[in-house]
Image (tube, rainbow, N blue to C red; front, side, top):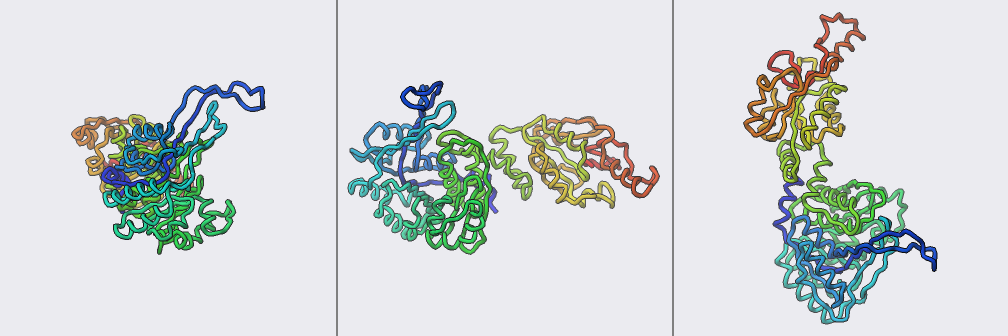
Length: 513
């Protein structure tokens, strides 16, 4: 399976053609200190205005923010809103040169009035009638000339007159002659049944309209999961991702069981365009060769970033990497961990590494791990395998299996990643990770710590934390044996009773209890 971080690294090599409605999202913001005398409505004292690309233009900006090269084809008027759209696109790194101007057409615009952080009203303007024959012909020519130069095509159809029936038939013929990863985001997906779409993205309301059935919100996940074949038949797509706002998304693919993604719940979110963010990341991942579940996971992570923002938002590649870093604590293997480490370093995070057995997790361990994370931004715990623990601690250990120990460690907020290793020492992991800080607990000094020369040779620093007295796995086991079996102290699995992260029954043992 391709690693998500590796996929993100390939995004800059992808070229995406976007066609759809260019809109202006304008935010008029200020304070509302009093009510109007003419009516019981707030009087807003405007302080500033922010313009952002909206509609299909927001999808283009999201693709660019994730690293792809983007060509955006649309039709705007010859008015001030068109000028603002062009400027906002250019500021976001998307060239407006492929936009077509239709004289006399009013550019689509959505104006939001926000007072003291509260959205009060939105008023819309702009032409929603179909394109003129001349503009339609120009759009089709431009689309046809650019199709083969791109790896993926996104049709973002808001139903406001830009994507006419002739444009759809053109997309169908271009896709049949020169297939691309074709993504369709439309309020009327039934129109696209014959275009050969790779993936479509209806929201919950659009999905209900597609299947002609009202679905109770409380039961929507279960009901929709049984409707996957109908969605794919109605839309003609290979993949359908039905987005469910705070409930995540249900993703359908022909011949596979539905795949569910989670979502990040956000109170009082004023974001617009999170669906564009989802589709952009989803499409780029598919174009980069990701499996559908991996692409859906990336898309959900990108949308989770967008919904934390105000206004019309997007997710950058670095923000997506940062989000993924917080979502998966147990990488599949060392290369997967290293991809996450590289992503963390790319955004300036400092890596801390420690290791141990962590057999029966107790307060001493928790205190140690919390302190271990302080010298950096991200804590990786190398965890001895069951066989390694047995070699180090004796045949009666571990008490808890590797899977159990991993799950408990991953549940700690101070731990960012847990990676098992089979060897008796963490040297191979240290060499691979190259931590900025290596933390060890016990009665070592840097001169006597076996790993210290390797860490220093790799450019890292060593930090040794002292024991926490009267806390140890060995002591816990001894007390259990005494209480249950009345074993005398000399027959216990004794220890000095301190938390020896690095506790040793013999000098060779260097792993936490």
